[in-house]
Image (cartoon, rainbow, N blue to C red; front, side, top):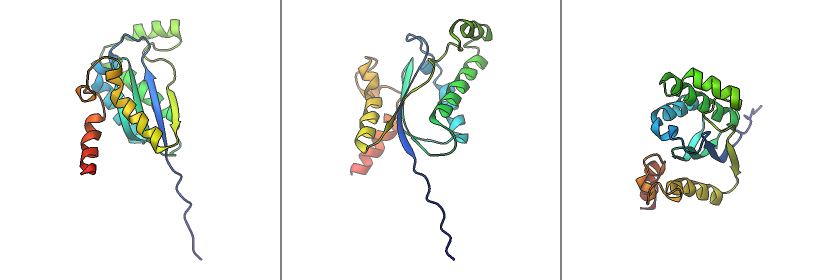
Length: 167
């Protein structure tokens, strides 16, 4: 008797936008190492592939390829946001008193806007458009004049690979 294993469930690709609470804050770029560590820590237990990512001072965009692993995208983002916020508190960037006061007034710790904007990408054209949107976002916001000039972008990882593939 031949026993076939069930087909693996395919991963899905999403475009995300996560924003800090308060558009003039610079916590993401000021504390990029805390953010990178939060992402690394979450990916160790709740895996996803990063197709593109750009971090601006007060928001970030990402394109992820997410496997079906029992955790939702919202849970993954919640873990990243929570880990980053705890890192800010440990680094004494935010005091417990400030966070408690924000929670009383806002209903949350005052670091992030609630939720994350999410769009499922259904075609390779959509995926490519969202990746190039990530790369161009620092230019769109007037932070730099060329995408390569922004240090907090996956363009530095991806453009050399794309150039090699074209050769």
